[in-house]
Length: 44
Image 1 (cartoon, helix red, strand yellow):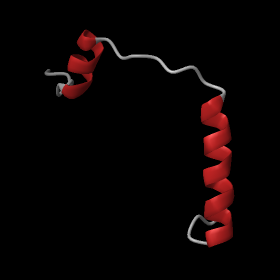
Image 2 (tube, rainbow, N blue to C red; image 1 turned 90 degrees about the horizontal axis):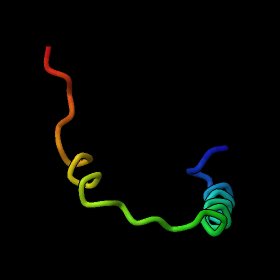
Image 3 (cartoon, rainbow, N blue to C red; image 1 turned 180 degrees about the vertical axis):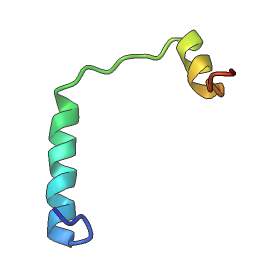
């Protein structure tokens, strides 16, 4: 699928919108949000 083609892009966007409706929304906990913003590269 070439997303640069307008019809393909629209079809993909509609698919994503439909798929998102099937997933419940979850809040991200403050600790997880902090972890996601840190640089978590292992130091050896």
